[in-house]
Length: 156
Image 1 (cartoon, rainbow, N blue to C red):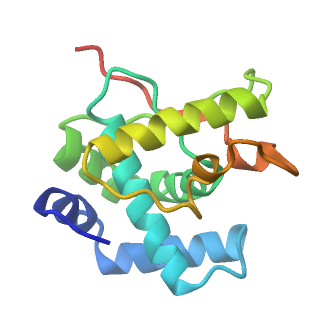
Image 2 (tube, helix red, strand yellow):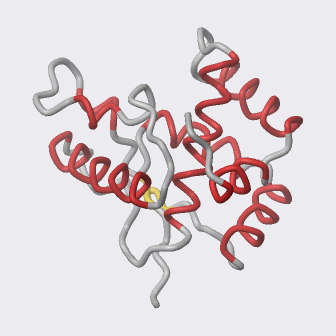
């Protein structure tokens, strides 16, 4: 992964101790087979997602795996609020959308748009965390790739 000064700064807003705690939480709560390397990449993907969500007027939608990390991070209210302030100068709200019906086709489109925004901002996207990138024709249960959550876009 090529890390630019901007992406390095975003990733560094999350301390090694907090990273370890987020990885442990997700491993214990929902993804027991996750490796430390997958966890580190997951924290980075979440940070990149939040960096983009904080600086767009468009709705940004995480993948299910990115959303797992975001949920864990939100539970760390003080570090999460500090991260948001340092990154965006405001709180980045997590907005569940339980009424969306979790349409797999719409979910893949929303995630592709978000992954495109992340890449346009200079971050890499990891296909293990953004499955819609590799799922032009998704076989199996595509609903696993869409969490039905989004950020609260900034009106600029």
